[in-house]
Structures are given as structure tokens and as C-alpha cells.
Image: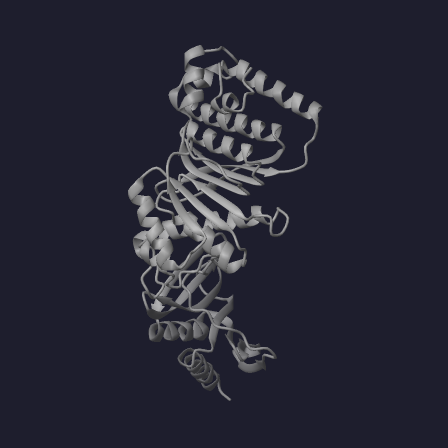
Length: 397
């Protein structure tokens, strides 16, 4: 069989695999063209704005370049490359591999290798991340204007949808550190419009099949009424929202306490409520750190970092770290294993710090004495007269 017939047969199999939706990719190698750093070319089928296209990844020595082409134009481009520049091409389908290769005297061979196990095809332009909260038209996602009734995430809600899933992914991993079935009562303090509250209830009740009570605490009455109405329409019978402040909320039994973006000392109020309720897991994402900053500014203690904190932006960052560091120490004093880490959120709150406390066995009086000493040394070093959380817990002696 002539080279031309081999090329025509390869083209026919490529075109047929695409039209019958069994195409996976084409890999081109052994480049003999004029571009010095080009090494390989990879072609796969993608769906962009509901249109099937071929995506070309040009693999250079130090970079990749991606270009997308309509199907017909893309197939012609592949054939042009293997007729002139690349000396080996492999077509991968769900059923077999087809290898076209130039040998001695530039003679083309064509061979096929059947696959034992079929492969699934994905047309996603970007590999989709597995989401714990699926956009499948749930009532609360529709009512919160995150998706339409068919489960399509609205363009202006993409960041919020990703943020919710990221929170649930983090909380899921933290809950798994607790004994199975130990989370029965959850309170979300400062629940706002309830995005996370609804998603967490959905995750715990539906996906983990955990029978729990979830309560959202929110000061704005209109949001409380809205969220309770959505919960009722969604059939979430063990989810409710109450009107009030974090400071004034009467704490029942709590296993998991969440407070995201509670401003300044409201985060301290939430941690205090969690500690007093002996919560198994406390998760806060602090917002603003004014109380400690005012203390540092008022007392103006000279120390090794004064050359930095004379600048407002550095003082702000220092106050954030000191405040959250003290909060972590207080949690440790009361028998919590602590974690502090940053994660990416959305366009409006691009970065957040999470302070996490996981209840563990009491380490004894000596351990507590060491923590109190560290707290006092830290306050003296930065000129902090008092810390709101310590005062709430009667540690500020």
C-alpha cells in the first residue's frame, strides 16, 4: 500500500472516530520540521460554547501553546503535519490505537492495536473538578440564584459556587478527623444569605446521611426570613435560621461552630461561644483585626519589628497575625489542636485565613501554664493591654 493510501486510511479513521464520538486524542512525535524547539503536538476534542472543536497543544522545549480549530480545519491540519513535519502519529480512540509511522526510505506503515478495556470520553474544555455540592438544580441553589432549574451555574455566580465547594471540601476533611457520627448540632454564626449553611446541611444530610440540626445565626431579619423560606421550600426540616447577634446568641449544645467573616471582636465572641459549649470543632475565618491593632498603636512598644510596623500596611498585617496567633493559643489552652492556614476564596475576598480548633484530650496544668506564659509574653512584646477573647474567658488577669 502506498504512502498516500496509508495517509488516507488514517484520515478516514480519524474523521470517523470524531463523528462517532469515540475519539480521545492524536499524538504527533518525531518532529522533523523547521521550528527548533517544537517537540510534540497533542490534539483532543473539546466543547467550547456548545461547539465541538479540536484543541492543539504545541509542546515546545520550555513552553506549551494551545490553539483551537473547527473540526474540519483541525483534521486537515493534522494531515498536513503528518504529511510533512511529524514522522509518527498515534490516534487514540475508546476502542483502539492506530499508529502511523515513517520508516526506512520514508515508507509509511499503519498498524492498529485493540484496547482490552473501553475508555470514557470527556469533552470538557477544562478538566472539571469533582464538586461535593453538585449543581443539579437543587431548590436552594436556584432560590439563592446560583443555578437555573436545569443545574447550570450562572456566570456571575461561578466564584460563589466554587467558594462554597471549597469551604465544604475543607469542612469535610476536618469533620473526618472527628469520631464518626459525633457531629449532631451545627451553628453557623453570622450566616448571611446562608450559602454555606445550606450547602453544609445538604452535604451532611444528603451525602453523608448524617441526621443533624443546623442553625444559622444572622442579625439582619430580612435574610433570616428569606433563608427560612428557602429551607422550607427545600424540605430541609432540621435547618433553621434565627435573628440575633453572635454576642447575644444563647448557645445550646454545639458540636461544630462556624463563623466566617465575623468582623473584629465578633470572631472572638464566636470562639468564646464554641469553647463554652465544648464544641468538638471550631472553624472561623476572621475579618478585620481592629481591637489588637488599636492596642499596638496606642502603646507603641519598641521592638525588633518596629522598623516594619511604622508603616500602616505592615502594622495591619502584623495585627492580623498577632490576633489570630493569640486566638490559636487560647484554643490550645482550652484543649484544642489548632490549625491556621490560608486559602483562596473569590474575587471579593481573594484570600482568607482559617483558624481551626479540634477538641482533643486535655494535656494538663503544666501545658496550660506554658501557653499562658506565651500569651503574656506576646502581649508584652507588642504592647497589647488586653485581648477581647481572653477577657471573655477570664484569662486576662
